[in-house]
Length: 88
Image 1 (cartoon, rainbow, N blue to C red):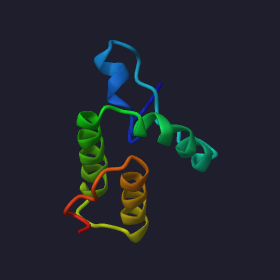
Image 2: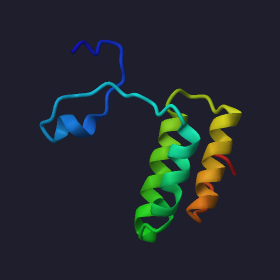
Image 3: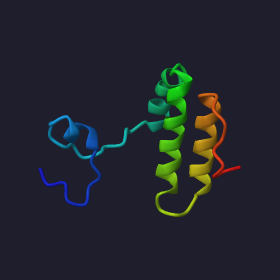
């Protein structure tokens, strides 16, 4: 399997499993809808690292697109967390 230039998830590699190329879901809206309730039910101390990870991912390339900001605001609202200073 040649994954040159393809983003892979590091978790399987860290578990000793073969890397699989990232395949975004075809219906990403339904995929997101399915995770909001479980994420909101997280212990509050685990929500902060979740939002920090999302923030780091969207800030990684040094630019903030409107769609990224809207998704971050939505994620914060749906898991009942404050919006990071990045958007304040």
